[in-house]
Length: 211
Image (tube, rainbow, N blue to C red; front, side, top):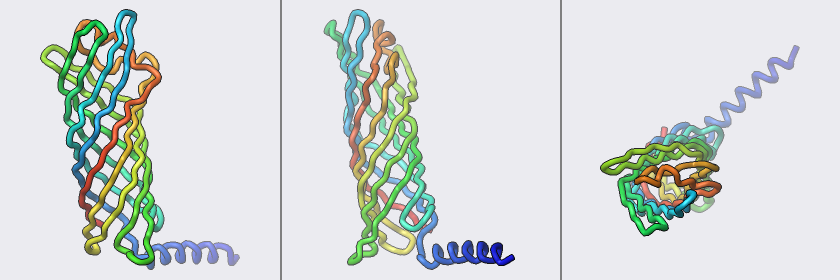
């Protein structure tokens, strides 16, 4: 008969302990950064192509939900308007607009420093999708691909509700077999960028509100 009461007491203690830790439940923020371009090699029956994403500014937003002290589930969105260069082995060159978007979900861990509680190193990893949207005067093309992001950085809790966040990230978009990454020119749609990954690096800084 005492077991339900014991279980209820444990639940109450769990929530009391979480509340006593005075941890934030939600963090909502945005940031700006610089995303370094990636490359990929593609082949067709006649041609080889080298695709290169130009480095450019990036920006985005994130929502963090605490699942336990110092551990969050993170939802994030990153956007980079840039350009893509496509060089074919027949000597032809193409250059056109590219929009790269990352939609991700994953986890973020923060670590408290004994000597500086308001400065917290953070590490995280997320999974999701990359959306590449390319266009020029004659063609437009969208492609969704699986991607992951690894992150390291630091949070500065300026006040109880306002913080600053510095971040460095590695973004990887995976291209499976028979993937036609971009469609440009007469041969572009036939180019297969298979069995490789587009790697990009990003550094950025932003602010967030904590509740």
